[in-house]
Image 1 (cartoon, rainbow, N blue to C red):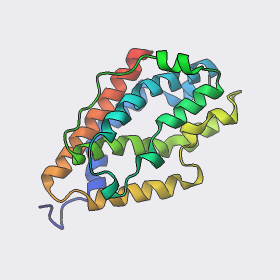
Image 2: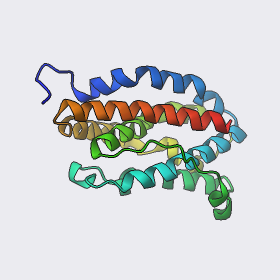
Image 3: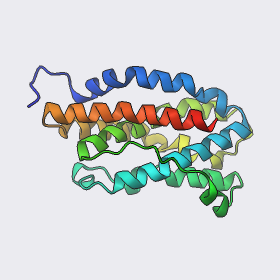
Image 4: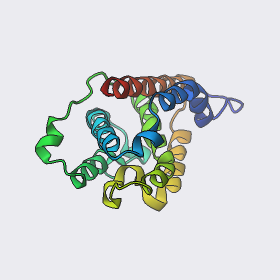
Length: 196
């Protein structure tokens, strides 16, 4: 069991993923990419090719709703699809985009929550990117992904952190989450850099 003196799961996840997170930010300079309309569209296409198969695979794992996590409220794929439609991509073009096949393969809900930590954490930087997009010709209707939960970003993140705090009941669960979170950052970096 996790002792009272052990670092909380969020602290463990942040520490475990710090290097991988920083490497991904260095590999993909989001403010620079989003400042250019063409690069922004390509980024969203790359994100769709990554998020859609990943979210589909994660949803196959049982137990999310019992933890309070509802994919109908948190999936990023619909946001990306809507942004790309606004930017002129047809449904046929969206379906023709390459999809990532080298994804993390969590085998338990604990591991899946490690993946979700990366997905949900990505919403926190959205406000900064929205500031970048405000200086471009990208229409406001094509900013759903980076707007994510709108004014509820902080509240949604706190709710997710509460799920994390209640979920792992063993050191093995916490370790599984951390290992899968690191792998998620690494796989994201590999896909996005390969697509550039």
